[in-house]
Length: 91
Image 1 (cartoon, rainbow, N blue to C red):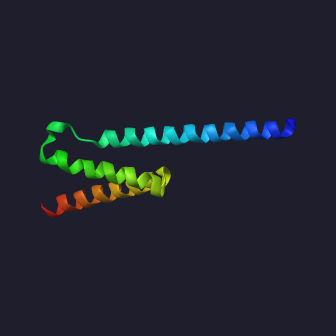
Image 2: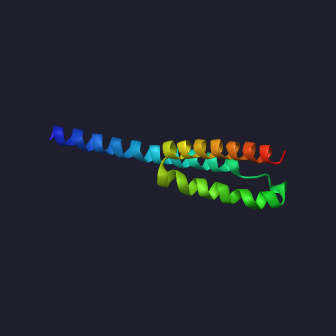
């Protein structure tokens, strides 16, 4: 019986740890989304940014944080290249 009690205790501990990690992940996602929320006085720009926050809230659980980080890095490099090329064309 001692072996079964140990297994039950271990299972309960693993379930509790999983629940805690899930809560930590939810808090981290909320913090990340809040970082992208605009100031209420931002006007038209303020109405556009909550869509970015919603997209991030949706994308992190779907793709994973590491893949989303790689995608964000690639998109930012592409945007910089686009702006540089656009700046050179206007000259």
